[in-house]
Image (tube, rainbow, N blue to C red; front, side, top):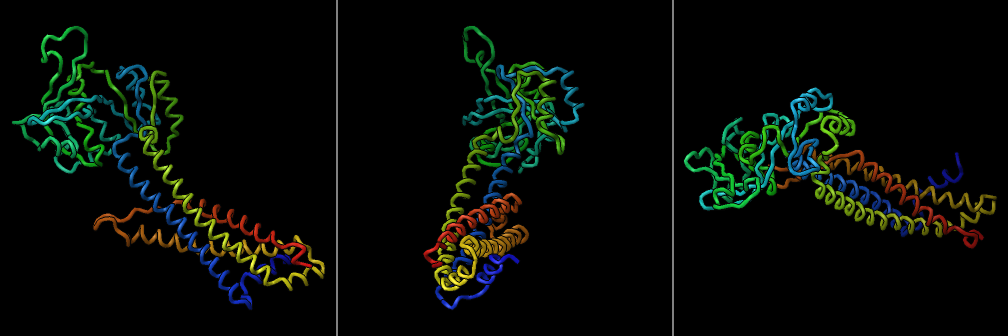
Length: 399
């Protein structure tokens, strides 16, 4: 057995005659355990909150969305639709018409987006699963599905065929306008369902059939604003992008969920970085307590070190003793702290001990990535603090 490792192991597991050093070493060990637990728990809690936040965005966002780079709308031919249907990468796709519209109901006004969708839309996203009242609209009808916030602001109910929701949009074209009636297209809509996801989405969309939206906005039957796509499981996104460009041309831009929610993803990544840096600061302080404990042990074992040096053990080997001791204590704290933290996270996932509301447990998520981050962080900082502490062994102490 290596001499440095053998002596380091003895120093790590045995108690010193000096009780103060035992207390300092114990505090350092407990600190490593606690900081490891804190770092993993913080990262797991944030992962849970991140997944919780993205679930709301993912409810309305497809895997990919295609938009044109030349204006608001573009044309899709029957041949292109057939190629998309035969694709080995696409599970389903939906043609979309989306435009900002002025709505009026019972002398109340609101500007929101009308979103015309075809029959495949509910196969691309799970939007219809978020209906909390009524039902999804039928094809080629004047029924619409509205957000809960829109319903609240306008005082809208369901299946009220005596009072329609009025929608207005400027007519396309050029020339002078002689009266207000010539300036706007008008449509009478009747809510059949109300969805609820989050405050932003609940006040943004009024869903209707794509035919109604095209007629209302004065568009052609093959004219759309975007296409929303659901990919087949385990599909390579880059491969799907290349296929879409070959079918639809290069005058399109393709966005995935991260790009559709660019600001949200950037905010979550920034918060994750802040949580990690804050937790790492606590770990650094704890591991420098370990360095202090090792220095105290070096001073306490000075006579033993002189003996080792006099019988031929090199200064480097003696330094390795305390460097190895620091690594042993670090790994001991890492294993116990990580084990306790994993237990806490798994218990919360399965038994929901901590609740936000009576029906909603506090979200946590066990991820192997977080475990790898914790292990790398603790080991790297442990190596640094142990190296700094072992560097205090010099010829002045040994002579």
